[in-house]
Image (cartoon, rainbow, N blue to C red; front, side):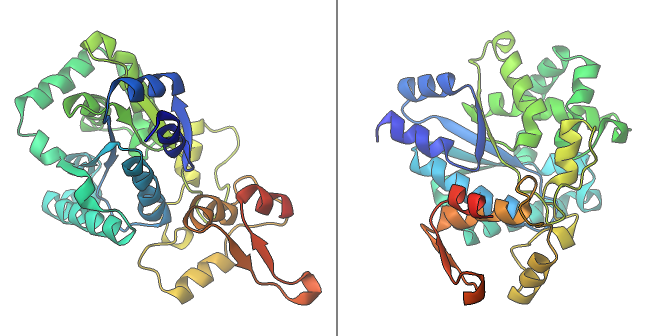
Length: 311
């Protein structure tokens, strides 16, 4: 497969930005099979964003001949007090995540699965975490706190400061060339990139993917820090009425769609258009919207720009 084709696969939606595309091109030119990773905190039920959209992007990377690592961040969930801080239960949720991604279309056999709890037994892991901490100010660490799904004001315990240091070290520990995480994880991915040369490592490529907006729409208040807005707006299992879970029944999905934020002519922050762009028109070449004749009859949608213009 030629480099241009591989680049286009990596750049396909839901990819939102690449830092930098030049570095990614150079990586593909100089390394036959680079490694990418995404980290997942086992903390509840999968939804369209964490399940289906992630499966779509992972399959793009696999097709582009990228070695993909599932980093099951069970110790991160423990720090974040998910599942009541019960580490055994957190591990069960991690196993459930893997089964969920299989159901969403990922061939797990074509990936590598690594667990933070295994890395935690390795002295090299903790030395690396400390090396990151020695190079990072407390203020910079606090600015990275939104990666935990929390604001700076939420940080009350010392363990919460360790979390960003662990995440910043992770790609160096298992040798990931591409950090393929959500837009809400930029504070950590950029820190990894910035510290690479100080650690004697090559700069990592950041490939950030779009976060599906929750069915509540914009939600966040204007004037907030961008990372905080992302926390407020993104689809989350902690807000089950605004997330379509992979376990929802057809009637439940229909009810959630009917109540979703979708005002006429408003594109920005519209969760229904987001589902069309990042899921429906990625899974199907075209779809038919059924309408009564008095409203113009059925219409075939072939690409997102066409749908957005019509809307």
